[in-house]
Image 1: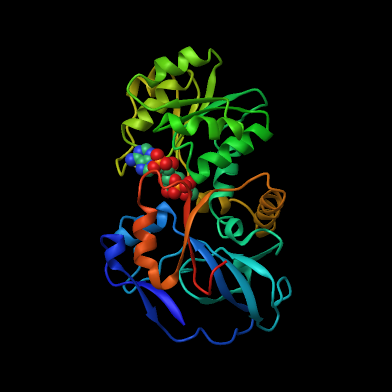
Image 2 (image 1 turned 120 degrees about the vertical axis):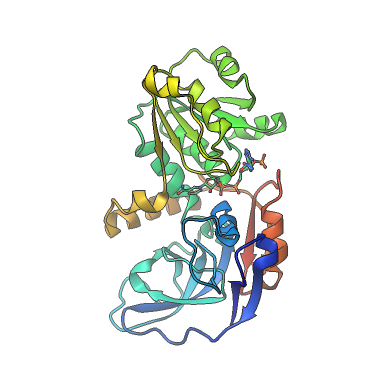
Length: 328
Ligand SMILES: NC(=O)c1ccc[n+]([C@@H]2O[C@H](COP(=O)([O-])OP(=O)(O)OC[C@H]3O[C@@H](n4cnc5c(N)ncnc54)[C@H](OP(=O)(O)O)[C@@H]3O)[C@@H](O)[C@H]2O)c1
């Protein structure tokens, strides 16, 4: 079967290669084997390939934090999934045609969820949901501000916030995105820039209780400067590649709190049953079309280098997916 391997850590499109490896074989007791139907290329996968991610396993390493698969076989004692089920995988190394994993790592999802959306269920939807629920207490009518608002997570935050009666201020890099984000429920859209706080203050007088950042560097400082005294700021990504920057007067005099979010850490606070409930709820919302993320292109696994290069372009207009077992 085919699998993506990193020959080295470095420039992602130069270090990924599609290689032939032995099939994972039949499932042992408590194991599941599934074919991978699609996986997205997320910013964290790009960091993984670069060697800048928190995980840096020995080489050759296989990237891939999420996927949608179809179960082909189950081992003795496995009762919660059966052959034919569509599953997401909580374990990594998913840039391959087939996986054999511990049964508890897979969660069955309704087969009616469009495969392209199901491929992106594991990471971004729960990230958006937990950023809204776990960082600070928000009530209907409260306001938050986020950057990378046109990213997959950003768009999910807009919709989930709207459904909860929260108001969003959405910071992006170009004005042409405003109509699309407003159509999905964004209250205010605004471009980033040095005078962000002044322009946000003109756009709304409402207190802003939460600032959500995925850029880091000075962009985090700009988001923080918009948050009202005593509010919360959370950073969950670093699209700029920079370390977090925040004005110390925002922390010391205005009493903001700054924290970091990582999905795995926040899911780990929950039981497996609670985690399954989160994915059942989010899966249902995908099924009903209440949530989705745009897809810009789908590549075969043999073209992994092209796919990885495409995933790093600015303004690409959606996720890049790979379909390792034929087009979806
Ligand atoms: N901590 C966690 O557990 C967790 C979980 C999921 C995601 N994340 C993070 O969430 C962020 C978004 O992920 P995603 O999958 O939603 O992303 P995505 O859909 O691939 O979109 C990437 C976004 O980043 C923007 N961007 C790229 N470089 C930028 C820069 N230098 N300055 C400002 N904006 C920039 C892009 O804007 P343009 O459209 O203008 O190019 C686009 O909106 C990433 O940082 C990712 O690592 C973290």
